[in-house]
Image (cartoon, rainbow, N blue to C red; front, side, top):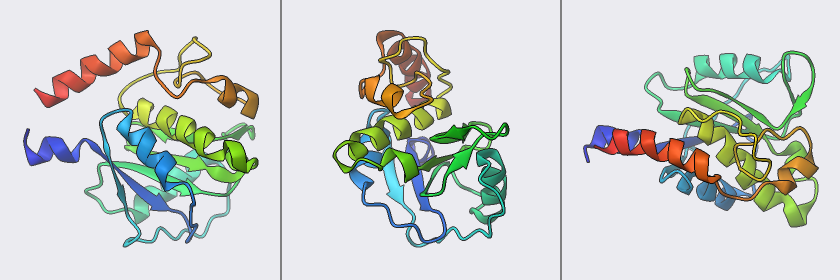
Length: 175
């Protein structure tokens, strides 16, 4: 496989405003679910003067600060994120820009469950990079979670249907 294709199989992890996550293994596990490597970009601090908690606005601002040649980016934060309607969300992916943001703020609220919750939601966001949509199977990692109970109900894997959809795209990429 060419170096160019290998680069497409990595997720760059950036930390918003010097946030230091204790859950790097959760992000590695999420990336490995899609046969991707995680690259921690501690060498490139992502500092933004935020006036919003709206996730798509933060992604838009982040795009200006990220290197122009980035591949897939997952931004880690501890700020409360909202969607454009003001509803709290765990994260958001912009597949076109290849940027996602996740907040550990609620996911890490119970230390005993934090690692698995973060892994599940990070894997969910990365799944959108591969073109996977929300799944109706509530135990699938690609099901939409509005609260922590719904995150906890998910299994840390793709359902059979989503796995097949992912493998179609993945196998085409590595040809």
